[in-house]
Image (cartoon, rainbow, N blue to C red):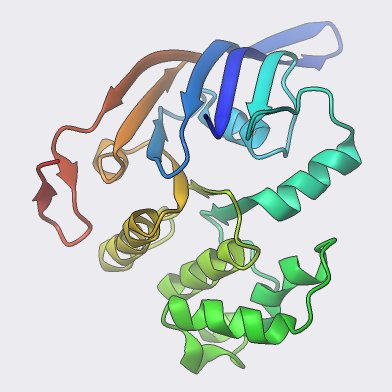
Amino acid sequence: MSLISIDNLKKSFHSDDLVTQVLHGVSFSIEPGEFISIMGPSGSGKSTLMHILGFLDRASSGKYFFDNEDVTDLTDLELARMRNEKIGFVFQSFNLLPRTTVLENVMLPLLYSHRKIADPAKIATEVLEQVGLSHRLDYYTNQISGGEKQRVAIARALVNKPSIIFADEPTGNLDSKSGLAVMKMLQDLNEAGNTIILVTHETFTSEHAKRILKIHDGSLLADTPVKNRRHANGDELLK
């Protein structure tokens, strides 16, 4: 059973009398536990596609099934609930709250959850330990490095135990060492059973995944497995 299945997905934006078609009938499926890269140049439509898949936007037409549920016509409130409980996001710009501690940033999705959480601080602390930041709980986000900020963002994405994690250019604001550390973390999370969708314009970064969807001018050009997968330690995985 597919976790995500989209059929003939289209997206257009309207401004006065101008219509800009961004996605042109995209179709594919994603199974639980996959690690997929959506790769394409700037303006290809990959971020728009991610926003639709992550319930941040709606398609203009086509069908979208998430965990075997047709989510095409859900209300904004229903989509917001799905987004909070099923989706984790990691963004290039981190999107952390300023003047707020690392622990408070990671607790935030739990505080907005519709589920009753007995001890949000305990859960957030455990996830921060998982990403190696137990020594930074009370630090403010302006007191930690870029690589640590991205690990906080990953912890925040994980805290609700989502069905899928979207990583949108997660290494874009990092140096090469920190970037590789983040990619290793994503690979480790995938090996632990998490479904990962990585959005990137870089071929090198995309090859850390197991499958690449190539988007160009709003169309799906290729859907191929990665034959010589790159390991975040710098070696290649021949599987």
